[in-house]
Length: 419
Image 1 (cartoon, rainbow, N blue to C red):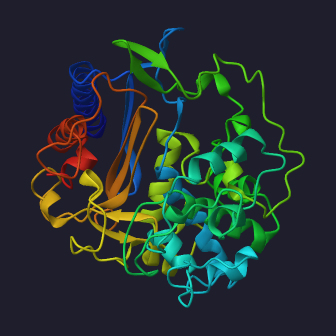
Image 2 (image 1 turned 135 degrees about the vertical axis):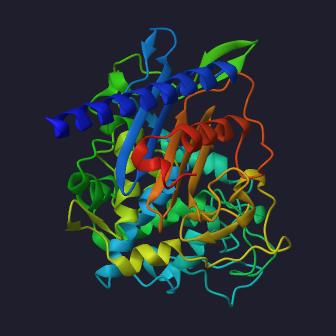
């Protein structure tokens, strides 16, 4: 009888704390003008709580819930690299090999033709590739003709149809960090050329099916399209629907049937196109907390997970672009938050890493402490007045408010770790 009373008492306390956090999430969403919001806390490598607020579709008044998927922008890079590391485990990929050897064309900075661009440099954004004026026309040609897209050689090789001189930096490969989405279109193409599989198929078989994830890097691959959040911006002081405004129906799916594997992996948007729910994304986080295992099953080696987390680019302020809230050292598709964030907004003594995303009005966060095995995921599909950098320097103001809500009012399994 005493045990039953203890269980009932604990259930009541947990319910109360859960309600407090939900109230805080609703209040923050209202205060900062967020269209919709998903929040997930992970503690001890388990989902400790999920909270949802606002709308996934403003016109149809559909709420955000545990099934809501978002196009999570650049957090997609972290997920892609997690799957790519499996090729290292299988000895099929050498991160320090010349990326051109995998791609089938010479990928060299014309300013430094003697210096190879390695696969590792692509994942670290240090290969001296730049998003010059040729990138957007190339990407539009890719997305508008997914069955027969242009080759990346047309973008980065002098004389190519989309090549412009500003596609390469003046610094040599390995010397300077500049964020470049094209790195990950190239990485996706390398995956295809090694495996002979289309990028989307490889990700599904290597990562999503073993983790029970129903997400996809292309909207056409999302079976529950009605649960896909519309991404909103602002026009004339009103909400304006943008990306993924399907209204529950994939009326004009693109035709991928003619695509030749290994031509241009950017057709699958490895740099930012993943559609996934916050709770499914938490499974990727748990995989990393468990050093490559999920539910006891080995997905990626411990060595590869540790390699992703390890700082391999050290920012000194002069060797990288100023990225504001993205400042910090880098692992493989990993942002390592600066020590100044620990104690100012994050729990004192913590060492958080992960990735953020921002595109078309969406903002996403995926950060965790791998040793403490706790972290958080935030995704919003629109901000009324746009994001503003907070005092911590590492997060936007609404993100800081959410972190404080979890840190100060988290569920009992988290509270011990997040104070």
